[in-house]
Length: 140
Image (cartoon, rainbow, N blue to C red):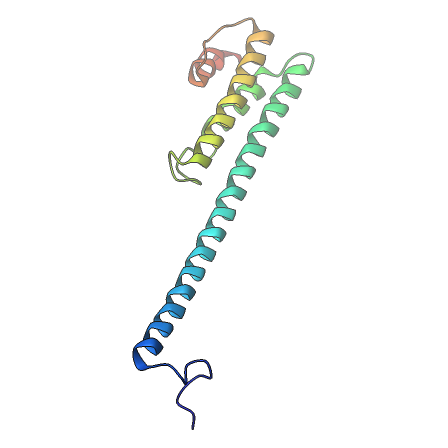
């Protein structure tokens, strides 16, 4: 029975231990990095999905407000949807780079909807979605 691997037969015991520890450490690092990569891919996928939802929802608001007569109620509901869709810190770690990208996209979609509401209704409720929602609640 052979009590060594072919590449370790000539090694002294301390070298064998060091080689074994180095290989195990390398395997641990590879597994850890693989885990981090998969986690990043999942987070990027979540961010992509959220950003797509925001853009699609703003497009739906544009369609609603392009009707004759404009569907202000639907646009306000879509503004609420964008505001409330997976709040910061739910799909991304709060404050992370991906969270900031998602929140910037959310803000841009809300601003786009609010600008369309401003143009269609003639109202100016400011730059916060809550103000628009409260102002246009009577038109629902």
